[in-house]
Image 1 (cartoon, rainbow, N blue to C red):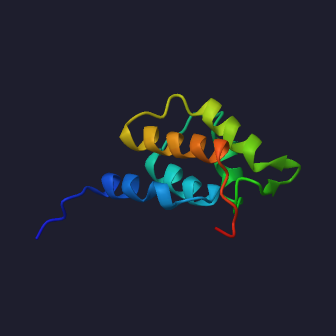
Image 2 (cartoon, rainbow, N blue to C red):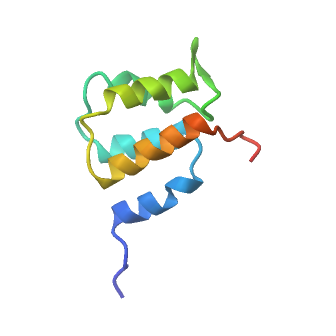
Image 3 (cartoon, rainbow, N blue to C red):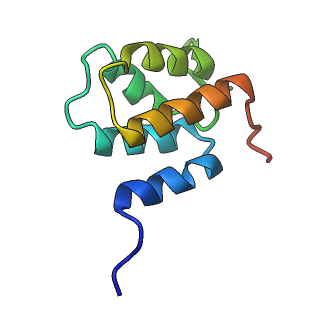
Amino acid sequence: MASQYSAEETIINMLPRLTSPAQFAAIIQAAWPKPYFGAIPYIQAMAYLDTIASYYGLDDGRDIVNRFLANAQTWRGPLAKAVKARLNQLLRHPVSSMD
């Protein structure tokens, strides 16, 4: 029996449960094979963040995610829209690592 969801739809459906920028970085790297050059350092930094409140060097996760979003305008499509919406939601309402 064929799955009723595509791989992209399956990922979109699980986004509400994700809270780690590292999880989003893995999705972005898999789904956006040639990212805009300005987004690359922020995708790489997000891969090391457990929470949006974590730090990568002297940069906090909120700044890294904001800078990624500012440089990800050329990433389009349903998955891109869903990932960006969830990251914006996490910026507005951070989830602690204890939740």
